[in-house]
Figure 1: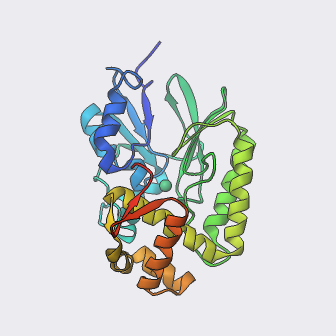
Figure 2: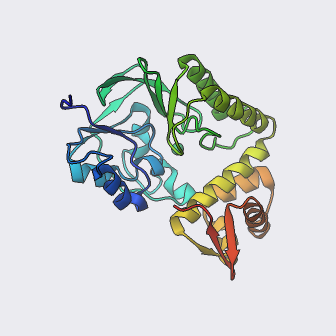
Length: 285
Ligand SMILES: [Zn+2]
């Protein structure tokens, strides 16, 4: 039986998807006319809290963010949650309270434990339901990867933290993982092994991680913009601080050379197509 406090949403998507997120939330597989009591964020990246404002104004729900994320969203500025650095967007939102590691909350008739999940985002949390061993992992673990880890020279504290978070997930031994991107999955050990070996490779070769981060962030930007003339890519990469910094530090490529490499590599990987001089992502946003 449902009681107040039962309906809790974890994370809210990117702001350009706010209409679709609201539709899914209201659907028969979603709230189906029940109230939404609370929205809890695993972390405050733009693709996890971009729908917070729209959902709060529709449902009047309480918004809870990880304690460590407060410094990234208050005060709200163009550089909140690295938006200016990465050329991302989000609607400003108000939060009502915070949650920290070792706190618990009620949701869906279960009690969820908050666990620290630093690495991809140093202030992120993941949520674990110990009776059925369900883990809501945010960007700390996907079936075949995890959210990109900030590039840095060795030793990279973000990679070290991400590896420790994988150890913590292994100790929790989840039966089911509900990731921040992609479908729920059961074989957490297999996913952890995949991600560990990738992080080890990034730790050995910081430029490899920088190239990976560049590709991930650029595809994310294309999903937002939907398309870009190939001839605009060098100027775009020169304008957005993340690409400029990472290229200077790890790749040593001028914007035109960086653009040539990036576009060719993404085409080869099947992540984008180039038609009549316009680059588009192959994945739907
Ligand atoms: Zn993230």
